[in-house]
Length: 341
Image (cartoon, rainbow, N blue to C red; front, side, top):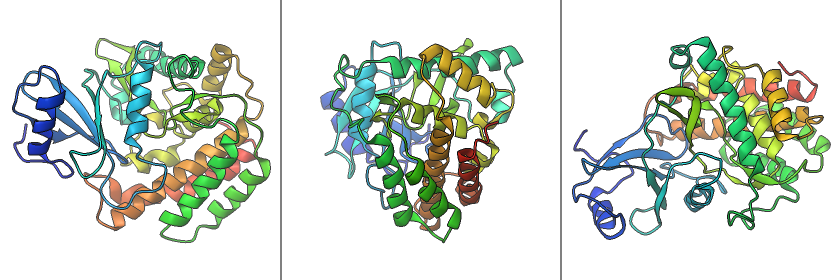
């Protein structure tokens, strides 16, 4: 592991924090930036014996409501002991670095980010993995927020209307160009916005590469990660977003080869059917949730593209993210017309 300090960390200050806060810390801290993390920055920390993962907001200007590290830490800590697999929460702090950060234990296992990585599995293992992803999402939506101490984690009432408004507001903040399809998609979503289908903990960014698989069994998920967008809201928004991540238009957001877009995974219709059967939820308005998912990811992609243009990104693959925005916006308009693969 490199001895240099990655951008965004201050190892001397973190070492002092670990010595005060983290049981069993060995006294010498090393760090490296992990792959992925197009939004929050993610680092692997070790003292040579133990390993932890630290998450902090990205460099540069931040969009309101995103990159909330306390939110991310709180939901992971609350879900420990439920049927939802998560990393063990260790610490949260907002004084040691120039930004808040969340610290969790490292979970061993593969993270499948590209189609190539996914296709190294057998077809049966890919299917079992896809089914497990749907089942874990349904398990998350079955957790009673009040039982795990998250009864005040968000405001489920009016969630969909706020999502439509909030993501359009963020578009105004991060856009680098005019895109009429975004304006048209926003107008249609505002017009068609239904009452919430229910209320649950929602992940807000659920897809295959935000999970860690069991090293010996790809059909078992060891941890769901990247909870920065979690809140209380309509569970079908999570499902709609998960289905949007299967669209090849999303691939440039993850450097051009996203495992979630692989045709080897269960199809959108198969996913929707399994989720409906497992959760018992009514999917008669799924088109709206798909449109909302496309809208959200188009805005997220534009925000990443804007940070890339400002020189505020770290790592590779950011130069193509902007290519995804227009196709995603167009996909949202098609979804509202009932175009579901």
